[in-house]
Length: 260
Image 1: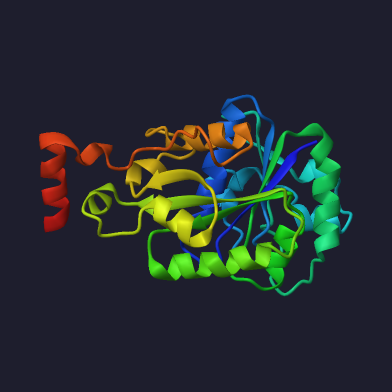
Image 2 (image 1 turned 180 degrees about the horizontal axis):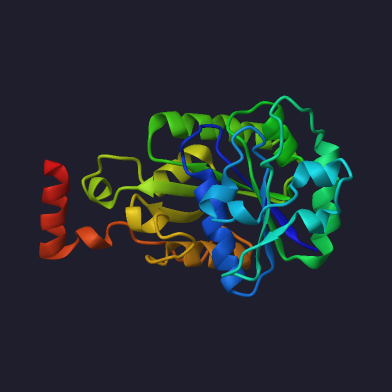
């Protein structure tokens, strides 16, 4: 049976969709049959980032309403055979989709897959509850700014209403140069504030998110490893966002970033 993990945040613009797709790709590379379920029926843009727009025939609404079987709605990535997308591109935002109907589709796919990663919509309204109710685990995405951490804290409180097996934190867009100067909250400080175990750290870097589903920095491979371990504590390996800013060359990089 697949592990069903929802990526949520409360605040928009923190990178949930990108992170969901990139982590799914790393799991797929490791041989794990992985589905990305786009549960954001209003924005529904997972197909854009994963590069699968032209291959979509059916979507999750078609499966829910019986126009196709759940497996027919899946789109297999041509470069990552273990990566599948369950899109929602044909969905009308005003259409009501019950949590039970979405869960039924995901449960029908679960026996033949290893992971189902659910991209949760922004906010804490109906769409949030629909996505979370389908999951067994949750990953709260937060960036090192007060608004994001505040919204993540609210979402963490809401997640306590669900019987989730685990809830962990993923710190995204962490600037190493600012972290070395103590000008932003560190991932571990965010973890302490939210009282959530830290699953992983992703740097603020164009290389990290503008290489398609590749992983040029290796930060998403570490996230996949942490998820496969099934825990977010103990002997974890975190991506060191401060590494490029250490030593003489690092000092020059920090100086140049400060001038920009």
